[in-house]
Image 1 (cartoon, helix red, strand yellow):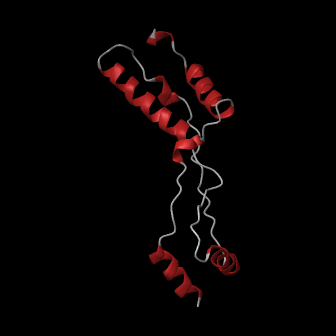
Image 2 (image 1 turned 180 degrees about the vertical axis):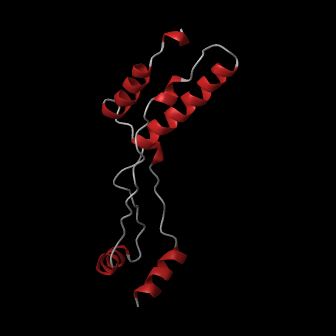
Image 3 (image 1 turned 30 degrees about the vertical axis):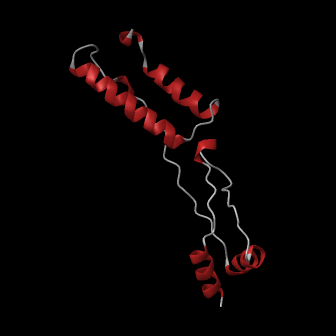
Length: 117
């Protein structure tokens, strides 16, 4: 079964995961690393003669672009949330389980007010 795998099989898997399943290039890089490790062990114990994923190009890692509030946006936020409990949701998370709702605790609220002045 392992002997039947080709480099095209791995390339097809990586392309399918990114284009059809919608996973990021970084996730496919992790898949690639895990598959390579597993098949390297298979080479070591002589189940296969070569680790074919080593011959396949893994995708390039995505650069993370940071976004943040400017001074005007921060002032608007502070005006709106004064005395209120707020919930912040990122534009994008890996999955629903990655979403978090955190209260703005008084200590941070007071710090933001002091910074505003």
